Image (cartoon, rainbow, N blue to C red; front, side, top):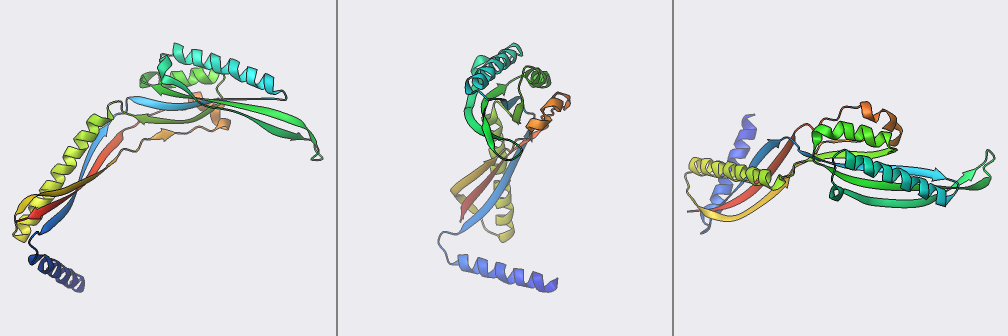
Length: 228
């Protein structure tokens, strides 16, 4: 243990000696700020997949189910401008008999809707209704805050405050004075909790409780100070 401390002291002494002769000495610190928030909006991807030996029938069935689901979503309180189609695909899947001989084709149609849900208290009921209306894919649910910029600003202020405090403590300990800020860089982070449902789980989806939890919106700043 004593050897490790001795090595660190030598390195520190060399560091200070190196900068002692510089006309523009610098001190670099990193500060962190974090704000915990309760999500107030959710993003959801809902899919409708149909298959038929006729492409026309598969598309028609998919359109009918999708229209019914969209109507259900609107009745549940989601605004029209918060509903978007993000994917529509048609692909052919070959059909084979037990001897691996091709006997025809199956046409699979997938239509994916993106929803912005602003009433989280109604989220469970909404999901239950869309499943009953024919949705057979729910890709994920991610939570967010509508006014994210407000909380990011708060986290950045906390990070700068933390960096400034560290700089003052280090400068005082080293017997030097801070002159001014030379550069500032920052990085924001706000991961979202999510729930993912697979297609084969969709029948039981309505019985699964959806909890938004809490989000950590954080910011890290790196500030370079010049010293007197």
